[in-house]
Image (cartoon, helix red, strand yellow):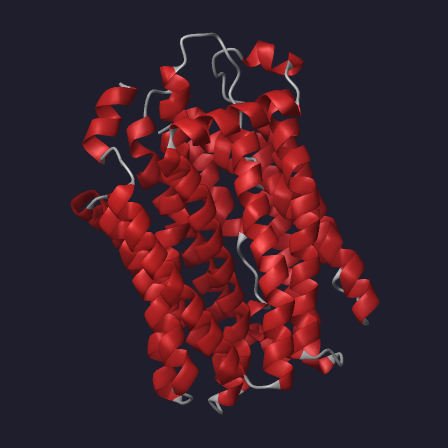
Length: 409
């Protein structure tokens, strides 16, 4: 296995040891923030990620993926350090701007891994690699969820300190483990500006409608899934579940997501791309439908459905987009630099744009009307999405996995 792939796997574990996550909303509430303000903060970080997404992608295409990734991890450590001392909403806003910037820069890791697979002629395992990465991510979350059961007695700030230590380790893993992929024409990328890379993205999307579809629909799914992540904690509260159980509940749902991630690559290979994309939509749809009406321990079933949908969506959309870009670049007869990082950054920007709009609206509705009503609105949104998907997927020409592997070889 290539060193970059090994580093990617190891870094995923340390990078996702967010010990405070299962009780983060409670941490905000203890400091006097409402749920609406909590989601407004997430919107701030998403907007910050939007602002930095395109520059970070352009920078990664020009100076290299590793340098940009290291800068992003460094900012994440700055964010986590000052989270040890934050006390009011304004301070949270400042830190979430830094956090959004770090997210945008860290997104350079995806094209770094993808370029590595191109370099070693292993593009056909892109889905598998991203799926394995997501599996490790979930294992990391599970470890932090279980550890929270013991760490929470020492207070919220102590769990933040533990995450900071893990993120510092993650920085040095990336620094010492990653090497810049030696992809073709790297020397010519220095002379290309953002207009060039954006132009290539526009050209690819016009020629490959499936790539355009993946960027838009993937952004919708992932932004709503991330929104659901923040809804889960107040949902557990409305189910009258004790806060001490949140760590265990998150561990249970992450265990299910782990199994789903392990199976996603294998299921996708058997079902094909169209069926897999429709299944992702259905999983999110059923999850929000159940959470809208069931407010007791059995609601855990629908939280699990959301986790399974996320387990499929994250690695599969990253892999599909990577495969389509690689395929389009292979069709080029001229010597051109890769625009993959820029396209990934635009994808992340669209994801954050949708989330930044939906998030404060969701918080406002939950605070002023009810959480149940808010979940019904999200269910209806996904129902409309399902209809649109059925129409689009029936018309789009999609190259299956075997055909794509042959064309890339």
